[in-house]
Length: 300
Image (cartoon, rainbow, N blue to C red; front, side):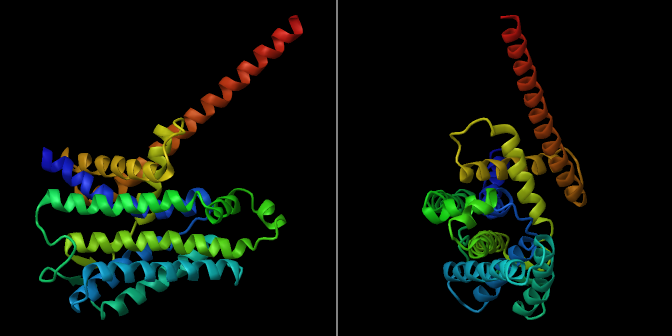
């Protein structure tokens, strides 16, 4: 049972980095970026091919981050410079990355690296968990610090009130491109770490990553949205754990691995429904309270 829980923690920490990336576009920029399905695989492919060539696994992760940021920049350029819709920009980059990822892995849909040194070469589950924790905490700290800077506030303001930022004489297009680059850099880093953990990269390993990211964010927000002290980065870690725990428990009680996509879909629907239901209840409660106060003022 302890290994079961540790396994959930390990995978959730690796995926939490990806969730932070999705959080930037989903919550801050209000940008439906589907290119993350491709950049997750891009990070894995770059990491795998470099490691098989004898490159240091940590340096391989650096190049994964660089590749992810370039892919995110391309999505931003399509949207900002070429005026292509947000959704279509992400889809175009995701489709293009499929072929690019195959090029990187020299046409191999599956590239193993079992005989090469990775950051998870120590087979101990506890040691692997510690490595994943270090990466997740570092990313969470950098995430939190950046979004407390002037540039971070500008990025959030661009998604919330772009007209106000434009009125300050700031080019929101460049801010949007930067946000997409940061988002996809985190997603690619997560892909690179996950590939090193499982010992191979696969051309289809990024399929549905956007759903995993959104499900994690929605679940965490539905449960903890009234607790203002929780930072967005920590919320991403909690959400990733809740999602992985839901999936692992579903498999443990007898669902087939082929049902994972359906389970993910149901989790997102439930989280959206419960979150919306709670918001609707609060709005109705506030309206009733307002009406009671108005009635009291009239009687007075």
